[in-house]
Amino acid sequence: MSATSYQAMTMVIYLSVMVLIGFFAYLRTTNLDDFMLGGRGLGPFVAALSAGASDMSGWLLMGLPGAIYSAGLINMWIAVGLTIGAWLNWKYVAPRLRAQSEVMDNSITIPSFLSNRVQDQRNIIRITAGLIILLFFTFYVSSGIVSGAVFFQSSFGMDYRLGLVLVTAITVLYTLIGGFLAVSWTDLVQGLMMVTALVMVPLVGIYELGGVSNLVSAVNQVSPDLLSLGLAAPTLGMVSALAWGFGYFGQPHILVRFMALRNPQEAISGRRIGITWMLLGVFGAGGTALVGIAMYSAKGHPLDNPETVFIALGQLLFHPIIAGFMLAAILAAIMSTISSQLLVTSSALVEDIYRGIRKKDFSGNNGVILGRAAVLIVAVVAALLALNPNNTILDLVGFAWAGFGASFGPIIILSLYWKRLTPAGAIWGMISGAATVVIWKQLTGGIFDLYEILPGFLANLLVTMIISHLTYRPNPQVEAKFEAGNQAARKFASLAPSDS
Image (cartoon, rainbow, N blue to C red; front, side):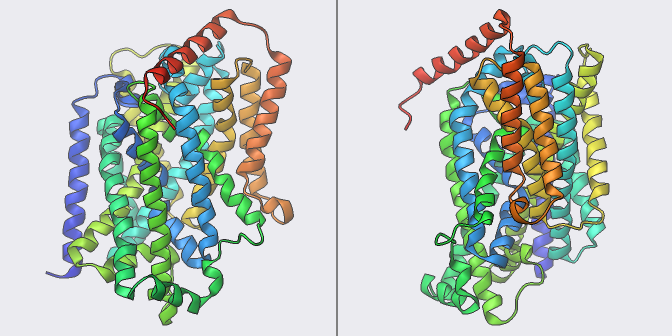
């Protein structure tokens, strides 16, 4: 049997398992709450790996290794910023958001939580937030589909468009059928596959090279700057890389995992599991890039597409069956993010925009039907955008990440810790954050080379606090719910074991 046949066999097994999980989750999905939030029944292990897998996606196995392969360890600052941001998000946002979202009329989406938090009777926040999610997640989903199409093109020589159709169809199938539970359970499997593959590739690569000293020597042969972290002369690029961490506070597909926890206390275990997974992943990605430099660039055979370094090493270092597992891990990373983003986008269309305009509850399982239809519509639009990719995976992800971080991050933090937040402040803060990201992205040179998330985040924070201060009027009902949510979070924290 040829190497391609072994790898294709592994891929078929993996894809079949994902679809089976989707059908199993279908049996557990009876209403819109189940479809969008899994009935708030996630344990910390599933929530942590689901958040990690849906967060990192193809970026961890293709985007980050490709960036380090091209420019060196200076790009590891992105991973540093992300790790710090993820830890702070689990520590300070997760427990309060879990408690507050339930107290605030059992909110099942980020826009509905923000709307209920400030008692926005006209649903302007809900609709505005839903439109922002629809805009940026369409680009985000499109970047994932690009990753999937490039994966099939690089791994099997498949036509780009055929790969695009295949990865879109499989992901849509299990997401549409099983909803949130299918996405979370498949994320668990995919997260374990991703981190195992990222640990194996650099370890075996270093062994093949004869040790760490030989690896360092080979990388230095290409350029000593590749091993530099740039500590001697901090740059605008380093600040931009660290600023990626701000994005965590506003990513709906990550925040919704916090809302789905069984109780606020489980955020502690979730943080420990999630950060351990993340550290293994980012160090594995960095090691993969350096091994790639030593095995390809140092030998005079640089890769045409740096973002395929993980794929190339998997095929070079392992038996075809193991290489097939490595390839499946990449597809797992891509599909986990696409599915999570599709689900959040469908919830924005159905639960926030459609329901926010009509202002009425769904009857029977109409909400689930509309949710599934929305998944299909968004997937088709994103796939059409991905037909002719002009940017790298990192560029596409970076724009969407900045859009969410700047639009929602400050509002989420203030909604959980500042009782004076008002509807007007939240609305104009979201708009100013999103607009700043879009405008800043179009400008270049000097300060405008700074990653757009930072000015967008600061603009949102400033506008929200100023307008909230000017429009604040005491509302006993809102403040009572705010205090009830915080008391619930504190109650579970006091029952938790000592947390350092």
